[in-house]
Amino acid sequence: MRWLKKSDKLEQGTGIDIARVQRELGVRVGERGSSALSLACDEMDRTNHRELGAEHLIVGVLEEGGPAAQLLLEHGITLEGARAQIPEALWEANEPLKHVGLTSEASNILATAAEAAGMRGHAAVEPEHITYGFVCSGFEFTSRVLHMIGVDRKKLLRDAEQLLSNSH
Image (cartoon, rainbow, N blue to C red):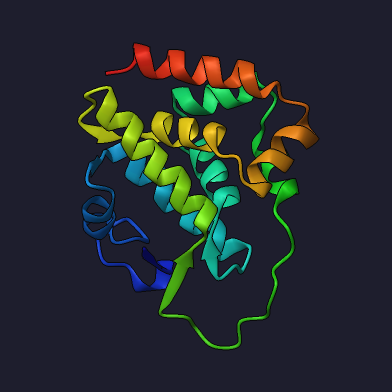
């Protein structure tokens, strides 16, 4: 999956090709989900990273401010805390990049989010599904963030599942 930087916008008001994301995930991305993904791309740009990763998705969900953000806040995952976990940029970009990649962890999170939406008959991927995908991820970054913040992963997973059951 390829993502575009904010300067290469394809859709008004987003930094990503939502139509392509929907094709690749096989499910519609809702308005709030699109907003969270756009905010994640903004965070990627702000941190000068080449790839959109889990750390950016977490910030995007928190900045979107909906029920998923509230769930993360209730479990001690704040915007400031999430940003503090984002590693320093790995390179200095001297020239603008046309396309940026999606990390395998972020790809897994979005695939899990799409699967969660489909299994529950939800019409679109929203931040609650992205959060569920984040909590289910067993990759290095998400595991480290949860551990460093002191989150009870099993409790957060139960609460994320409950949030999905109550939505739509």
